[in-house]
Image 1: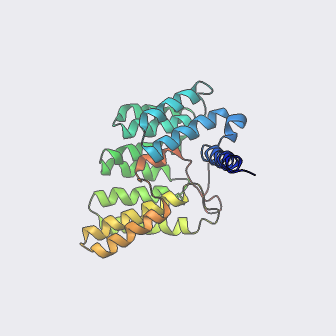
Image 2 (image 1 turned 90 degrees about the horizontal axis):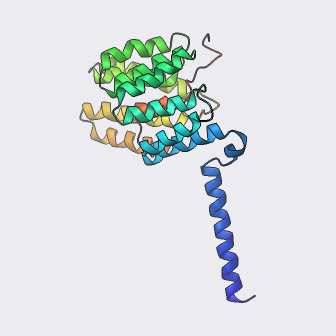
Image 3 (image 1 turned 180 degrees about the vertical axis):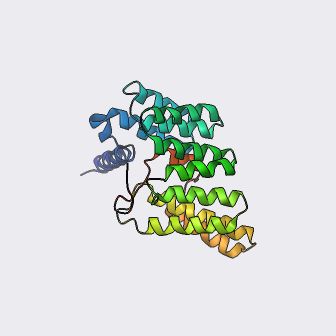
Length: 237
């Protein structure tokens, strides 16, 4: 076999591998099984990995063209509006979920919107309300920890952070949010250490956080996912 044919085979093989990787990364099978979720998935990837909020909104709109009653596109749109600083529009999307019967998510979302505006006091009642029937929501505890940290109540912040850590470490199923929550926990630990001028510990926590999730963690990211509730330990509505 001459060198030209070998080169062609290598190029074709490389193109095939890249195509397969792209197919799996963008969850191409959803295009055929659930095009609505495929658009939502594309929007989430642009939002999380690239920070392209406008592209996220575009794909949320494309999902709406298919179905406006399902919650995923509303959550994606709420997250994108939130990061653009369009708080009223984000609240509108969150409120639309309440109309559709997602009360816990409404309170959770309102809590996160308050956090993004650094309105720490108002965020706490919302987050507590969201966990009335789901006290094992690790994200909820993490966000409460962030709220108390913002208020300067380090003891309460650490208490809720440890609760979040205990819950997520007991998550044997390793949910889709597992790495994000772990990263968020270590990043908040980093902030606490920096507050106490413990720079070495702060750096260690930052490196650990990157091992879980290398992209930027913010409350808005958690708007896009389902609330995690351990049904064995919490009573659900």
